[in-house]
Length: 203
Image 1 (cartoon, rainbow, N blue to C red):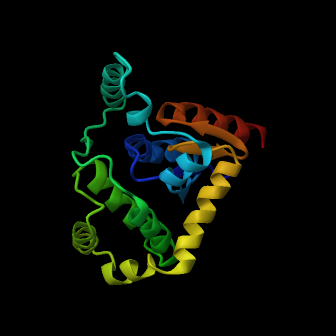
Image 2 (cartoon, one colour):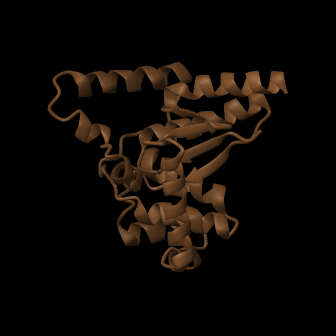
Image 3 (cartoon, helix red, strand yellow):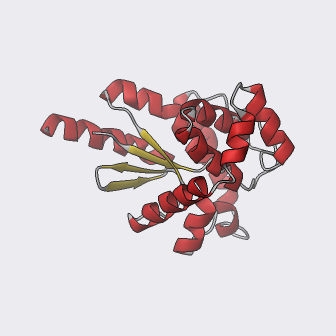
């Protein structure tokens, strides 16, 4: 069994899920498969909108979302989180970079670095120079990855990941699959863990 984590670096809730996944893996004995998708593409294909757009103008809703975020961080003891002052950040190059990093064998190092620079040590990661400097700073092969994200196989793979996700029922990030069961949102990681545990018992 390999549960899947479908993510875009532009989602703070995807980052928080990323921080919690190692604990789920340790408790259940499974290893998550990380699947990069383009959230903007998901939104276009599903006619969805970001929470910032959806909640704009709704009295009290954004304020409650901030309270909910504080509660979540406190519940799990998460301290390495800051809202990115440059949000929203265009993540097209970041997500193509994730695909390229996977193809070039540096995937998790890339994922950890990009999530860190989006939500722990926030930077304007859609600035090409900042992106390049961040890659180099973490020892990633900046020249190689920047070249690869312009190549058609990388672009096509991200498009295919995104379309396949929507075809399976995805409408946002973070999304999770355990088999064909879809779960959405950082709060449902508890349900993901329960589903994994139940399936392992039944196997």
